[in-house]
Image 1: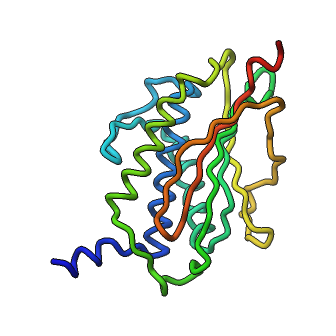
Image 2 (image 1 turned 180 degrees about the vertical axis):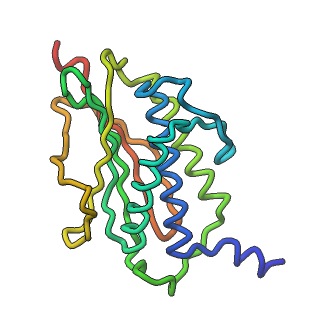
Length: 207
């Protein structure tokens, strides 16, 4: 029994990559729903991390996420991802209104093999992720109301030598002028650590 418990707690690079990729998928969907980027009726409810979550039910958007997350997963396996940023921009003004940042820190031992697995109870990892998702859901309590229709972009910061697919393009950082920031919780698999924060246009900056 003790041996089975230890085996369950072992986190390989591949296993950690799957956990982080799934977290990004759920976080992106939660943000898009909570911030009203797409109509509420275009989402469906699922159970994840012990929570009722809403994910897109739109086929085109689902297909886009599948391809995006596949590429992100490949970069994570190679230890090439520095951060993922979800940018929310006003369609009419083209002004960046929110910037959700997820910084990825890989342990020095991670590389292209699973030769040095780490150990951490998966229940503990899931609890840490659940706490971040709850914070994202609760963010509507402090984030300014988005007054105009908005669109989103996903930016991935990778190592300079990373191979970039042909359909991807370089982008500027899309920073927000006079922003306010709120740091969210972190989670760690012992292979990857993810720090989360949101920056938003400070409504008092124009006063």
